[in-house]
Amino acid sequence: MKNYRKTDGNLPIGGQLALSLSKIQAMNPVVFTSDIVGDLSRELESYAPERIFVLTDENTRKYCLPVVRNDKIGEERIMTIPAGETHKSLRSVEMIWEILSARQARRNSLLINIGGGLVTDVGGFAASCFKRGIKCINIPTTLLAQVDASVGGKTGINFNGFKNEIGIFSAPEKVMIDVTFLKTLPPRQILSGFAEMLKHGLLCGGEHLKKLLGVDRDVISTAGFSALLKESVEVKERVVTEDPKEKGMRKSLNFGHTVGHALESAAIEEGTEFYHGDAVAHGMIAELYLSVLKKGFDRCLYHEIRTFIQALYPVYTPSASPEKLYGWMLHDKKNEKEGVNFTLLEAPGKVSIDNYCSRREVTEALEILSKRD
Ligand code: GLY
Image 1 (cartoon, rainbow, N blue to C red):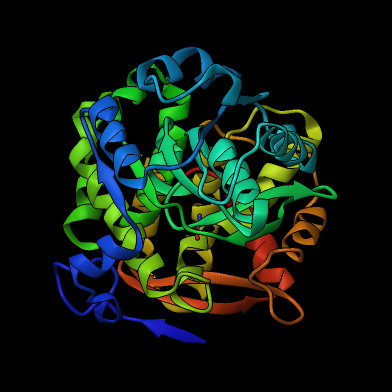
Image 2 (image 1 turned 180 degrees about the horizontal axis):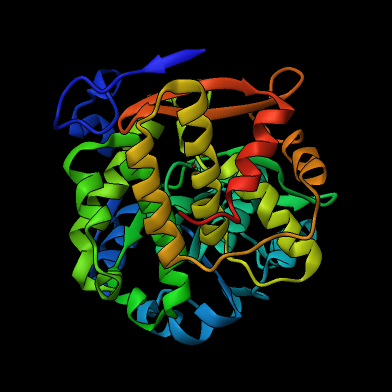
């Protein structure tokens, strides 16, 4: 078990992450922009790719591509995959490879991924393998993708019934974040991304967490919280710069996800609409409970956060048994031996990775999800 301690009020997640801003910018080039057209044009001039390809889903083709499009992007090089988790598939990747190949993409071609996490994950994966790798730029258009999925180079697809079973770490050249895209997002999608922000808040603690817990439901929208969004992305950048391939510290980003992914799998199997962020939010309740049990996380703060989450997020009680949920957790990629490996917290900003919890402890934590104070 390894502990990472917060040592300094200003630094998200501990002294181990005392990286200079220039190092972060060099490795994880996230840019916030309010002029996506101008900034993208400048990027394209600087890369001077031989051909430019674009990947969207059905929604971003209709609503986001027209905002971004410039005359360097030819119609015949725009690829569109259907929206929805079932299309995070090898078939979608094959379709992209077929088009790249048929339209003579070369190694110095560039792929621009415009969309949510599905598009940036699938497009990033396709680009990373095509001719052993072509460059890509991510333009995330959902809060979830802006704050999490598009940053840090995780790419991949679902396979054989398991989420993100096949994939590779491959960082994009640039991640261009424009909060204007959030204006047209349904509130449920905003809430979904907010769960990842809350996770980053718990991982870094301090003022950032306070601000997040003080946020008004109505403020969880567009420009009202773009400063919080930037702080949140910075937490993620620091973690992935320190540990790009998830050998240690990056496992902290899985906080809430071990239980969360199991809930998500159950919802998908039952056909219940339950967003990734909903699952992570409830996953964080269960994993904070385990943190109280095993790491001495403050019980009052746990109750405060649980009340906050339960007031914001739809509650879902899976019909899958705890045994079945536990079975899904056994497939978690963090597991390095028998049992289920959790990232837990001693306190906000004090992260503890590689904690194996017993089946009984996990079942107890799952039972908490349907309880109220
Ligand atoms: N979404 C968790 C990570 O990027 O590591």
